Length: 208
Image 1 (tube, rainbow, N blue to C red):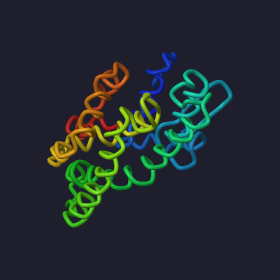
Image 2 (cartoon, rainbow, N blue to C red; image 1 turned 30 degrees about the vertical axis):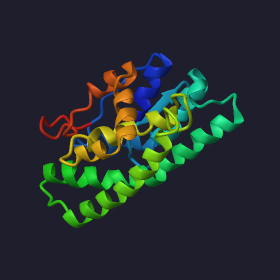
Image 3 (cartoon, rainbow, N blue to C red; image 1 turned 180 degrees about the vertical axis):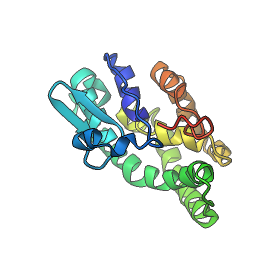
Image 4 (cartoon, one colour; image 1 turned 30 degrees about the horizontal axis):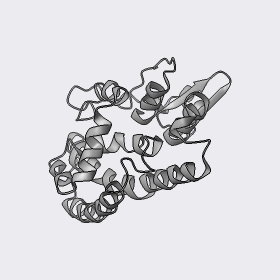
Protein backbone atom coordinates (compact mmCIF):
# COMPACT_ATOMS: atom_id res chain seq x y z
CA UNK A 1 0.00 0.00 0.00
CA UNK A 2 2.87 2.37 0.75
CA UNK A 3 3.97 2.24 -2.89
CA UNK A 4 0.55 3.49 -3.99
CA UNK A 5 0.37 6.18 -1.32
CA UNK A 6 3.79 7.57 -2.23
CA UNK A 7 2.68 7.87 -5.85
CA UNK A 8 -0.54 9.60 -4.86
CA UNK A 9 1.43 12.05 -2.74
CA UNK A 10 3.97 12.65 -5.49
CA UNK A 11 1.12 13.32 -7.92
CA UNK A 12 -0.71 15.64 -5.54
CA UNK A 13 -3.90 13.69 -6.20
CA UNK A 14 -6.86 13.75 -3.86
CA UNK A 15 -7.67 10.38 -2.37
CA UNK A 16 -9.51 8.66 0.45
CA UNK A 17 -8.17 5.71 2.40
CA UNK A 18 -10.76 3.13 3.41
CA UNK A 19 -9.32 1.30 6.46
CA UNK A 20 -9.18 -2.48 6.30
CA UNK A 21 -7.77 -5.01 8.74
CA UNK A 22 -6.11 -8.24 7.71
CA UNK A 23 -6.18 -9.45 11.29
CA UNK A 24 -9.93 -8.84 11.29
CA UNK A 25 -10.38 -10.70 8.02
CA UNK A 26 -11.68 -7.70 6.10
CA UNK A 27 -9.72 -8.76 3.02
CA UNK A 28 -11.65 -12.04 2.88
CA UNK A 29 -15.10 -10.51 2.96
CA UNK A 30 -17.24 -10.96 -0.18
CA UNK A 31 -17.37 -7.25 -0.97
CA UNK A 32 -13.59 -7.01 -1.02
CA UNK A 33 -13.18 -10.26 -2.96
CA UNK A 34 -15.47 -8.73 -5.57
CA UNK A 35 -12.90 -5.96 -5.96
CA UNK A 36 -9.86 -8.22 -5.77
CA UNK A 37 -10.42 -11.96 -6.18
CA UNK A 38 -7.03 -12.64 -4.56
CA UNK A 39 -8.13 -10.96 -1.34
CA UNK A 40 -5.16 -8.62 -1.27
CA UNK A 41 -4.63 -4.99 -0.33
CA UNK A 42 -4.48 -2.36 -1.79
CA UNK A 43 -7.30 -1.85 -4.25
CA UNK A 44 -7.86 1.41 -6.11
CA UNK A 45 -11.33 2.55 -7.11
CA UNK A 46 -11.34 5.47 -9.54
CA UNK A 47 -14.75 6.09 -11.01
CA UNK A 48 -15.83 2.92 -12.77
CA UNK A 49 -12.31 1.51 -12.74
CA UNK A 50 -11.15 -0.94 -10.08
CA UNK A 51 -7.49 -1.92 -9.96
CA UNK A 52 -5.42 -4.24 -7.78
CA UNK A 53 -1.69 -5.07 -7.60
CA UNK A 54 0.25 -2.17 -6.11
CA UNK A 55 2.73 -1.82 -8.98
CA UNK A 56 -0.05 -1.64 -11.57
CA UNK A 57 -1.91 0.90 -9.44
CA UNK A 58 1.25 2.99 -9.07
CA UNK A 59 1.81 3.09 -12.82
CA UNK A 60 -1.82 4.02 -13.44
CA UNK A 61 -1.66 6.90 -10.97
CA UNK A 62 1.50 8.28 -12.51
CA UNK A 63 0.27 7.88 -16.08
CA UNK A 64 -2.80 9.87 -15.12
CA UNK A 65 -1.33 12.52 -12.84
CA UNK A 66 2.47 12.65 -13.09
CA UNK A 67 3.86 10.86 -16.16
CA UNK A 68 7.25 12.51 -15.71
CA UNK A 69 7.95 9.95 -12.96
CA UNK A 70 7.68 7.31 -15.69
CA UNK A 71 9.63 9.44 -18.21
CA UNK A 72 6.81 8.65 -20.61
CA UNK A 73 7.94 11.24 -23.18
CA UNK A 74 11.44 9.79 -23.59
CA UNK A 75 11.81 6.31 -25.06
CA UNK A 76 15.30 5.66 -23.71
CA UNK A 77 14.66 7.00 -20.23
CA UNK A 78 11.31 5.21 -19.90
CA UNK A 79 13.04 1.99 -20.93
CA UNK A 80 15.54 2.43 -18.10
CA UNK A 81 12.68 3.05 -15.68
CA UNK A 82 11.16 -0.24 -16.84
CA UNK A 83 14.47 -2.06 -16.37
CA UNK A 84 14.79 -0.98 -12.75
CA UNK A 85 11.13 -1.58 -12.02
CA UNK A 86 11.71 -5.16 -13.13
CA UNK A 87 14.85 -5.39 -11.02
CA UNK A 88 12.89 -4.16 -8.02
CA UNK A 89 10.07 -6.66 -8.51
CA UNK A 90 12.09 -9.70 -9.57
CA UNK A 91 15.40 -9.27 -7.72
CA UNK A 92 15.09 -6.80 -4.87
CA UNK A 93 11.66 -7.70 -3.50
CA UNK A 94 12.29 -11.44 -3.73
CA UNK A 95 15.57 -11.04 -1.84
CA UNK A 96 14.69 -8.46 0.80
CA UNK A 97 11.08 -9.49 1.35
CA UNK A 98 11.87 -12.87 2.98
CA UNK A 99 14.30 -11.16 5.36
CA UNK A 100 11.59 -8.76 6.47
CA UNK A 101 9.02 -11.54 6.82
CA UNK A 102 11.33 -13.67 8.96
CA UNK A 103 12.68 -10.83 11.09
CA UNK A 104 9.47 -8.88 11.71
CA UNK A 105 6.28 -10.65 10.73
CA UNK A 106 6.92 -14.23 11.86
CA UNK A 107 8.01 -13.34 15.42
CA UNK A 108 4.85 -11.29 15.97
CA UNK A 109 2.76 -14.16 14.62
CA UNK A 110 4.40 -16.48 17.11
CA UNK A 111 6.27 -18.36 14.41
CA UNK A 112 9.96 -19.12 14.52
CA UNK A 113 12.17 -17.32 12.05
CA UNK A 114 14.16 -19.40 9.61
CA UNK A 115 17.73 -18.22 10.09
CA UNK A 116 18.93 -20.31 7.16
CA UNK A 117 16.67 -18.40 4.80
CA UNK A 118 17.73 -15.09 6.33
CA UNK A 119 21.41 -15.93 5.94
CA UNK A 120 20.93 -17.05 2.34
CA UNK A 121 19.03 -13.90 1.45
CA UNK A 122 21.55 -11.65 3.19
CA UNK A 123 24.32 -13.15 1.07
CA UNK A 124 22.23 -12.67 -2.04
CA UNK A 125 21.44 -9.12 -0.97
CA UNK A 126 25.14 -8.31 -0.68
CA UNK A 127 25.64 -9.33 -4.30
CA UNK A 128 22.54 -7.40 -5.32
CA UNK A 129 23.75 -4.29 -3.51
CA UNK A 130 27.02 -4.50 -5.44
CA UNK A 131 24.99 -4.06 -8.62
CA UNK A 132 23.08 -1.13 -7.12
CA UNK A 133 26.30 0.44 -5.86
CA UNK A 134 27.84 0.25 -9.31
CA UNK A 135 24.78 1.79 -10.91
CA UNK A 136 24.40 4.57 -8.34
CA UNK A 137 28.07 5.46 -8.55
CA UNK A 138 27.44 6.71 -12.09
CA UNK A 139 23.93 8.17 -11.74
CA UNK A 140 22.06 9.87 -8.93
CA UNK A 141 19.01 7.63 -9.30
CA UNK A 142 18.47 4.15 -10.66
CA UNK A 143 17.12 4.98 -14.11
CA UNK A 144 19.34 8.03 -14.59
CA UNK A 145 19.90 11.46 -13.09
CA UNK A 146 16.19 11.87 -12.39
CA UNK A 147 13.81 10.54 -9.75
CA UNK A 148 11.32 8.00 -11.07
CA UNK A 149 8.95 5.26 -10.02
CA UNK A 150 11.94 2.92 -10.27
CA UNK A 151 13.34 4.55 -7.13
CA UNK A 152 10.07 5.12 -5.29
CA UNK A 153 8.98 1.52 -5.78
CA UNK A 154 11.90 0.36 -3.64
CA UNK A 155 10.71 2.35 -0.65
CA UNK A 156 8.19 0.02 1.06
CA UNK A 157 10.24 -3.14 1.56
CA UNK A 158 13.47 -1.20 2.14
CA UNK A 159 11.78 0.82 4.86
CA UNK A 160 10.99 -2.40 6.72
CA UNK A 161 14.39 -3.91 6.03
CA UNK A 162 15.91 -0.87 7.70
CA UNK A 163 13.88 -1.76 10.81
CA UNK A 164 15.67 -5.12 11.11
CA UNK A 165 18.98 -5.86 12.80
CA UNK A 166 20.59 -6.03 9.37
CA UNK A 167 20.04 -2.36 8.51
CA UNK A 168 23.72 -1.51 8.82
CA UNK A 169 24.39 -3.69 5.78
CA UNK A 170 23.84 -0.59 3.66
CA UNK A 171 26.80 1.15 5.31
CA UNK A 172 29.17 -0.87 3.13
CA UNK A 173 27.58 0.63 0.01
CA UNK A 174 27.93 4.42 0.27
CA UNK A 175 26.17 5.30 -2.97
CA UNK A 176 23.23 3.07 -2.09
CA UNK A 177 23.08 4.60 1.38
CA UNK A 178 23.16 8.14 -0.06
CA UNK A 179 20.38 7.23 -2.50
CA UNK A 180 18.28 5.86 0.35
CA UNK A 181 18.82 9.00 2.45
CA UNK A 182 17.76 11.10 -0.55
CA UNK A 183 14.55 9.08 -0.90
CA UNK A 184 13.78 9.48 2.80
CA UNK A 185 14.04 13.26 2.43
CA UNK A 186 11.19 13.46 -0.08
CA UNK A 187 8.00 14.94 1.42
CA UNK A 188 5.89 12.13 -0.06
CA UNK A 189 8.05 9.47 1.55
CA UNK A 190 8.17 11.28 4.88
CA UNK A 191 4.38 11.52 5.00
CA UNK A 192 3.77 7.89 4.07
CA UNK A 193 6.51 6.60 6.34
CA UNK A 194 4.91 8.35 9.31
CA UNK A 195 2.00 5.93 8.93
CA UNK A 196 4.16 2.81 8.59
CA UNK A 197 5.00 1.41 12.05
CA UNK A 198 8.28 -0.53 11.89
CA UNK A 199 6.57 -3.64 13.27
CA UNK A 200 3.76 -3.57 10.66
CA UNK A 201 1.37 -2.64 13.48
CA UNK A 202 1.68 -6.00 15.23
CA UNK A 203 2.75 -4.33 18.46
CA UNK A 204 -0.36 -2.18 18.66
CA UNK A 205 -2.67 -4.72 17.06
CA UNK A 206 -3.45 -2.19 14.34
CA UNK A 207 -2.42 -4.39 11.43
CA UNK A 208 -3.35 -2.99 8.01
